[in-house]
Length: 216
Ligand code: HEM
Ligand code: HEM
Image 1 (cartoon, rainbow, N blue to C red):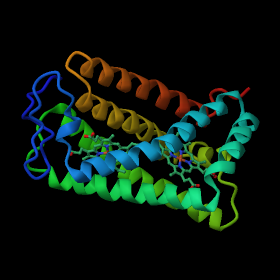
Image 2 (tube, helix red, strand yellow):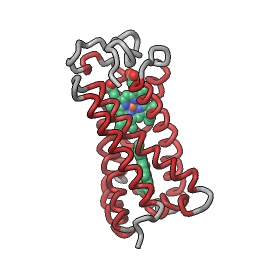
Image 3 (cartoon, helix red, strand yellow):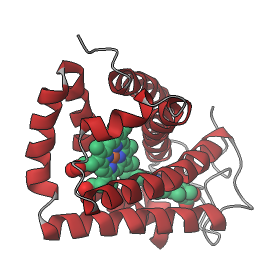
């Protein structure tokens, strides 16, 4: 998994990731990547609460609803939701721009994992947020039952199970790659491996929960 410091992640306008071994790469970060990262920090607060909050569904739909209502109390405030959705749009736009700009220089497994996971996140977020907002517009409560419906409507489970699994896995992989670039030698490969392992576990648990495996 280790890559040469000249390798993958030098995509932006010849700003190289040429830090000597052991030097954090953060100082070599061009502007758009920094903005993508800053917006990710804001978004991460919502996403962590959102994705981990779904784990409450393991204890049943009622428990999930309690957590959802509590979180909605924060992110459905108009200003907060406007900032959140703005960050989602910016994250996708900046991410896709980074993806395109880096197309010629991208080398190595980690850079490709970051690119592919980012591309999937962009696709997922487009479908996911549009579906949620459209349903809300029609007065639907976009709760656990809404999210799980596809997994209980054959043959749609063949779409929705990989759709959700890959979303959670891609998120963990994408953040794992970011850790990889920003940690020191010796910490980076274990951090990425841990992120991938957490991704598989979390994604598997959430899809199993949505599919009703934990229901009595
Ligand atoms: C929505 C679609 C997304 C796309 C297309 C995307 C794409 C990318 C790409 C291509 C890179 C590498 C940048 C480079 O090579 O210079 C990157 C880096 C990164 N992404 Fe994303 N991304 C997306 C979403 C996210 C999300 C949801 C998060 C976290 C909540 C995130 C966090 C990061 C971080 C922290 C980095 C590393 C920045 C650094 O080098 O320090 N991205 N992303
Ligand atoms: C198993 C995985 C997931 C499930 C079951 C799920 C489910 C849901 C549900 C039910 C809502 C509506 C919430 C509400 O009514 O307040 C929602 C909204 C949303 N989700 Fe997810 N989600 C998942 C993963 C993700 C991931 C990985 C991301 C980001 C990378 C994400 C981003 C969002 C965003 C931005 C909203 C819109 C929030 C709003 O303004 O209402 N979700 N999701």
